[in-house]
Amino acid sequence: MSARNFRAFWSDSPLVTCKSRTTRLVEAIVCSKPHKYKDLCYDLTPLSYNELAAGPQFASRNRVGGLANVGLFANSGATCRRLSRSRTPRMSNIYSRIVGTGSYLPSRIVTNDELASTLDTSDAWIRTMTGIVQRRIAGDGESTAEMAAIASARALGNAGVNARDIDLIIVATITPDLVFPSTAALLQARLGARNVGAFDLSAACSGFMYGLALADGMIASGRLKTALVVGAETMSRLLDWKDRSTCVLFGDGAAAVVLVSAKNPGVRSVRMHADGSDPNVLCTPSQRSRYLHMDGGAVFRFAVRGLVEAGGEMLEANNITAASVDWLIPHQANLRIIESCARKLSIAKEKVVVTVDRHANTSAASIPLALDAAVTDGRVRTGDSVLLLSVGGGFTWAGGLITWA
Ligand code: UT7
Image 1: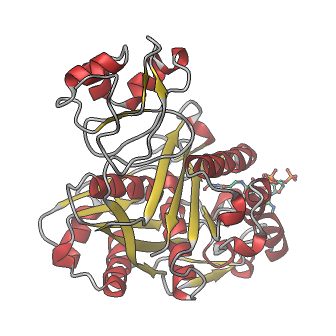
Image 2: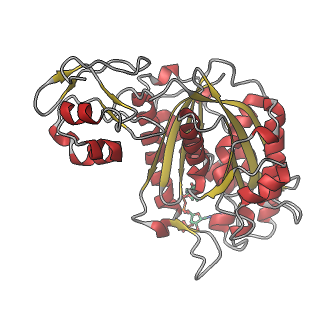
């Protein structure tokens, strides 16, 4: 196959005009199977077959600076990432779709007034500074795995999917019950799922979004058909209940989504980010202390920046405007962070799903809990564009855009 008369061999992708360093114009470089198109890849661009097979990151870092107008698709497997910053087509016409959500909140409600009875704080301070009115706190029998199991069973029920049909289980958590086995392995047994892959994922408050990205990629690659992604946290066990600057902010809970393979989106794109250059700003340094530590002001500033950046990236990647977003579901840490993020993204506050008032910050569970609430009360409907944005310790941050199906 000659490079010069090459056209996209994957018909589902939009054609992109690309220019190689050797100024040869081509219609598209879409490389789902670089081994098959080895000669072509080499011929088309100065990128070698190995560079293409290594994936877009390599090319992005090392080559794109010198290549104007390059819309290059390079991937050896699961998903496709275009290196330019506009649309994000996939390598296949397989998508993932959320077909069921479910959640679990501990029965014990702890109000601000209850906290103020033992701490030097007040309902007024907590409401004004965070928007939090109450939180749920797990009792003795309510472990992370137990909450995950109930939320998952509800999601499976709502999806009409049998636990035996799950091909992959991901539990996003920073509060596993055990160091190992993973919460996901415990969940597999509790659900009676087959002996499929099951693992925990640690990305703090972005954990659910990371799990969504992984499950979506696996489904889009055709490797599996049904995935369970759970966010589950017992944050109460990480808190120093004498530290008013942290303990008033968090709560416990779990929520799950069932993803299946579909011909149409579904999940349109998910992107993950991390910057671990300043880990002490928000951490639990288990060597010295088992308690969560936070520089509130620094986290606040980064949270707004991370959410806005992730949101802007999603709008740009999917070539949509803020006006066409039907629902914004950001990480629920602080109402002031949420409002600032929505304002900066020009998304009307009526379109923002808020649960931080009732749940407080449930880390990886916060986004799926809010999604489940908005689906259950009928706000999110078929065809709606839902923008999911997370930020958390690491720092980690992520954005996802889904069409509710
Ligand atoms: O998932 C991500 C995790 N975390 C977050 O997203 C949290 C991000 N940060 C925040 O939400 C805010 O930083 C807080 C709500 C935690 C604090 O707001 P702030 O505007 O950064 O206040 P501050 O930490 O500067 O504290 C202001 C005052 C201080 O008193 P002084 O030094 O001015 O006398 C604090 O000691 O408020 C005091 N304070 C409290 N007062 C009553 C701190 N916590 C409390 C409290 N009740 N619970």
